[in-house]
Image 1 (cartoon, rainbow, N blue to C red):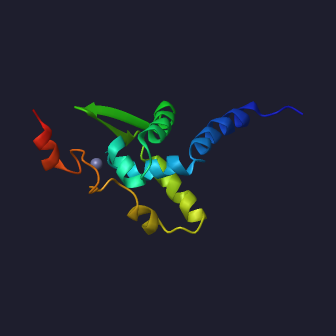
Image 2 (image 1 turned 45 degrees about the vertical axis):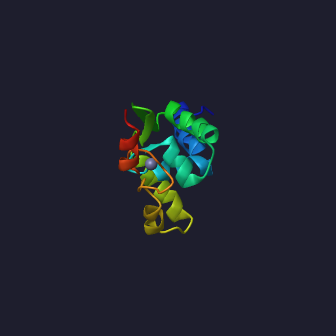
Image 3 (image 1 turned 30 degrees about the vertical axis):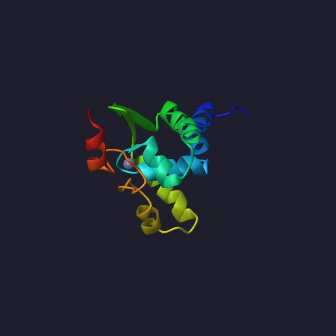
Length: 130
Ligand SMILES: [Zn+2]
């Protein structure tokens, strides 16, 4: 019997995405960035994880093409390369009985009181400018 190589190759490529999303930490990062952008200090404040741990996951997601980054002054901001990944995460949530409202409520980087980035604390950042 001859294997259908096309479906095997296709399945391998699809599985790569699920492998990336098999990490709760990476899903949490993607949801926190949501439809906006977030710097590492913002992710630290929201998720309570050390920068080294976050950077490792951010690098994996960026290398895989799910994230892109942009530098502005001393901050590096991350955003989703394609927001379709949020729909995929949302569908996985629904399969596990989580409502889209519950997912939406935790998606997007709203200003955070413990983050000092220009998005969260514009006045504080202005004071630091030379
Ligand atoms: Zn912030």
